[in-house]
Image (tube, rainbow, N blue to C red; front, side):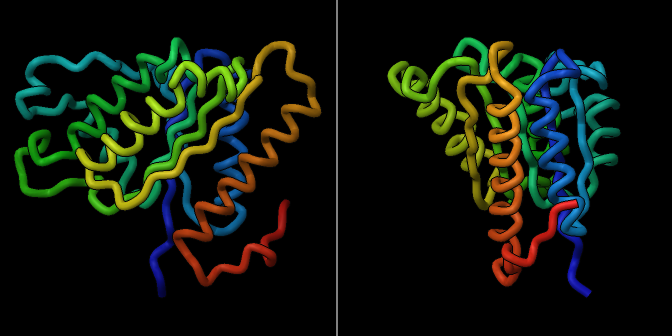
Length: 207
């Protein structure tokens, strides 16, 4: 029997009634409906501590980080879901990368294993600005460079994928949000099809 693919959805937004959390939920529901495993880590509701302390930089992960890796288990796909604030991810998510992803490297655990080697990294980002404006300011290209290519090189991710949703804000209509969430669902299906090329997406049934 083949191993069940596992997704870890790392979501970061202070408002529970946000598009970001809705996107994370829709992604989780989509992969779960396909029979794949998913664990959701809601950083704000977890009250995650993003501060990287000197002892952790020296190779001793905090107890909460050790517990986080134990909870995550053997993950195949890490999905980062977050809004773009001032051209970057929220500080709490950056802290999660620093502390949790960083502890998955050889330096973190003091061994010769990299817990992220060969895994997949998917990013679902949103902003109130238009894609054209973000491209003009170089924001999306910067994120691809730092949070896709760089993290892939540093942590050994086998593949990265990025899906962005623009024009998301208080003025967004229900129709706009429905369209975006359908795109999140399509993105999840695309990720699954890349992990299991033999899977026929046309046979997928929504609940």
